[in-house]
Length: 82
Image (cartoon, rainbow, N blue to C red; front, side, top):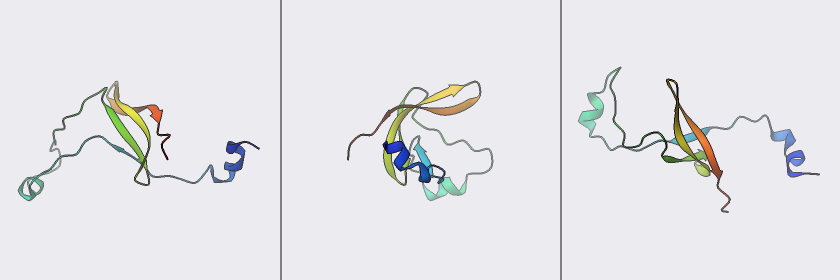
């Protein structure tokens, strides 16, 4: 029996996947001044490496991609560390 066969019963459980694009520190004043349509500038851009997390644990790595007008993440590798 393969590992895939062993976990097949769990295959349809939804998982919350997070992709951390960047972090930014704002003052409370800056947060209070935000409104619909506000843009928070980030330092990262397409092609940069990012972490992909499930349950707060890094499970994979990827890069930011832009396809037409949509931002996405291309998985480049999986975290094999214990």
